[in-house]
Length: 378
Image (cartoon, rainbow, N blue to C red; front, top):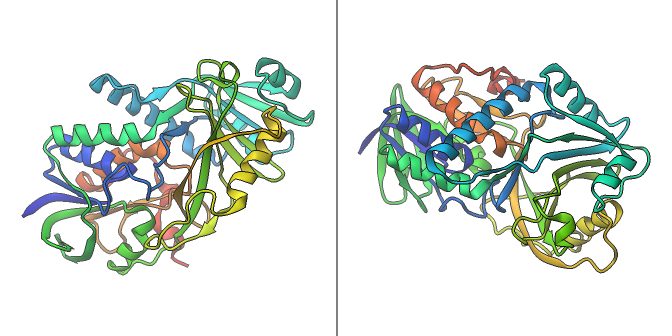
């Protein structure tokens, strides 16, 4: 069967792309080796933070703001709650480059941001204990995306606009001759004019089929929920957070409907082969221990911290931890989205829109120069 566009990888970015492509009249097929949402991607674990004053690079701010606009639009279309405005607290010592970048980006784009001293934070949120040399940046307009619900919503809308989604359907081969794309799965062969490749940790293998070798590194990551005082840590009163500490970078979420306080570590992790079984949470003693030491030091919690549940997901890192969003250097009918390096989900709405623009128009109205595939030419 022939399609206008085939999307290989129907996770965060791919499912959003499928929606925007089909909405714009493209006969679209989405293929995924699993059944999104699933626990082999970067969207696993219910929630993701969305923040606008961006500590990684101020170039992300316009994309974050556009992403929020698009998330709001999807909510209005479906009457589903995808975003919780809990606010986000970015924390670090007074010399942290991350915190300095948060403040600078907020100033440049006139974003609402309250800079707080440690004692102010400790007083406002008794569940937090900051040392004196720490400061915090509270962004009240940001918050939490329900990541798995977002993917299900995009799937629903893509189907509504005529897209076909085939799950548990791994791609075995990709062949391109001019404007003719051929995708081979275990049981079928599909044809299209264009291709979107957004396969997460499997991007390296699939891109190699198109003679493109990119420095992408899949990493095992862990996060967990802990029993807490619900009156202190619930999502009505407690913000999502990111901490830049001397021992690591940690992030977390308030307890949503009694789920417990969710905490993960952003840096570190073990390189993995995504085709192999991922070592489950708790099989390394440090999985739980590392998070508990963070809670004991910064979250006013003592030795009797009780784990509720722990899970794993996969980051796919680029060397500079910036994304790859671009057209293939040799195939102008192939758009690539890869290497989201653990901070991509919040952008999946706008990335999906960008991918559809690259396929339909050959360029995007958004500035994606930072994400060029050609930066790895050397």
